[in-house]
Image (cartoon, rainbow, N blue to C red; front, side, top):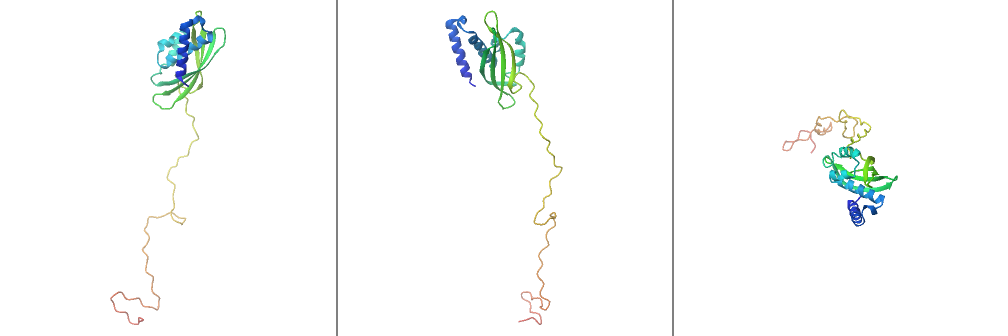
Length: 203
């Protein structure tokens, strides 16, 4: 998607038209030039210039659909991806537009199909357009509702966690201090440091 290519093509068509006149251009070339100029001017907000390539019956709807452009909707780039002649005086063009919402940072892409009709003077005018692929919202459509996923059960409390190797819950009571081992039944308790040994104590 490169606007510079579209600009270069438009410039080359303009030079060719200036040298040979519109009478020397084929119908597909004139239709492509009109599609390029329309979408380029609409991208940069030059709606009065874009209106020159729109049928009077389609102008109000064209402007209404682009009312948010430059405000809530920002067009980043566009690419004329194709054009074909569908009848003696009818054609269709396909335009891929990259855009984003001003309050978001996500780049979106929408593809439009535009219908054209050549009037008695040989000028191509846009008569109809529709979105055929990509994101909603470029032409004022309401954004698609998010798809709801499966409901996740919500915990009412934190799970109980057990510490240590036991199976029961841990308690906050402090562990009792270690007790000294009791002396054998036939042996008297040892004397404390600095006291005389009890009678009958082994020496």
